[in-house]
Length: 340
Image 1 (cartoon, helix red, strand yellow):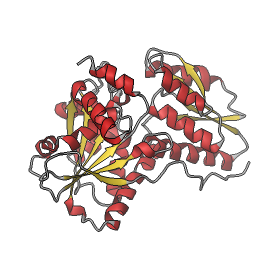
Image 2: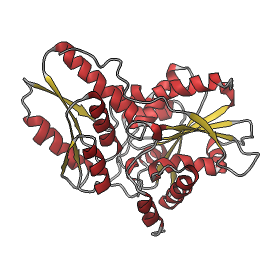
Image 3: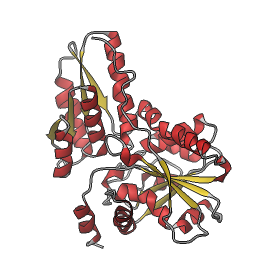
C-alpha cells in the first residue's frame, strides 16, 4: 500500500477578521480567528486531522496492515475524526455516550462513520471502545488508530498551526505584535490551549502575549487547579457548555499556565448562553456555549481589562479564537436560555 496522504489537506487556513463587537469606540480592537470554517466545523480538524494523517502514514510505511480509526467523542472531536476519515477514505468508528444529541449522531453517520452509542458519559464510552472494540480486533491484520479528543502532542502540534496563520496575517496587515495584548480561548481538557502555547513558543511570543483561558462554572478544572496551585479533577460536569466537559486538564496545560502566567476565568452558564444567541444573531453562525465563552470577552472588553489587570485603548488588539462546534442547534440555545 503506497503512501499518498502526506500532502492531502485535512484542515483549512482560516481568516483572522476584525469584528466590531463592542459599541464603545474607545474599546480595544477585536480580531476573531474563525475556526468554525474548518471541515469538521471546529478547530478539532487541525489536530485530529494531523494525528490521523500522521499515524496512517507511519502504518503504511512500516507494513501492509489495513487501518481503522477509532474515536470516543460524541462531540466535535468525533465529528472531526469522521470528516477526516471521509476525506482520506478510511474506515472510522465513533463511540458516543447516551447523552449525545441525535443531530450530532446523524452528522457523524452522514459522513460515513459507524456510530456506537453506549455509556452514561465519555469515560464509559471510551472504556467500551478500548476494551470491547479495539481490544478485540485482529492486530496482526489491522492497525487501530485511537483518537483521543485532546490529549496527544501530535494533536497539539496540529492546533498550533493557527498561531502560524495568526502571525502570518498580522505581518501581511503590517500590524506590530506589540499591539496584541492577549489571545482569548475557551478551554476544556487543554488541547486547544496547548496548541496555542506550542505555537506561541515556536514564534518566541509565549512570554510576550498573554493568553486568557475561559471556562464555565462547572467545567472550570484549570481555574480551580490554578487557584489551589495543584492539579484537581472535578467530581462531575455541571454546565451546559458540554464541549468544555472535561473533569481535568492535561499536566502540560497546568504547567504551561503556570510558566507563562496564563489568565484563567470562569463564566456562568447564563452569560455564555446569552452570548451564544447574541453572537449567532450577529454572525449567522450557530455558536455553541463553549465557543461563546471566549467570544463573550469581545462583547465585554471590561472583563478582559479586569483579567489582564490594566486598561486597554482603541489601538490595542485582542485576538479571540472562535473555536466553532456543531453540538447545538438554534432551538437548543433558545431552550437553554429559557431556563435562566
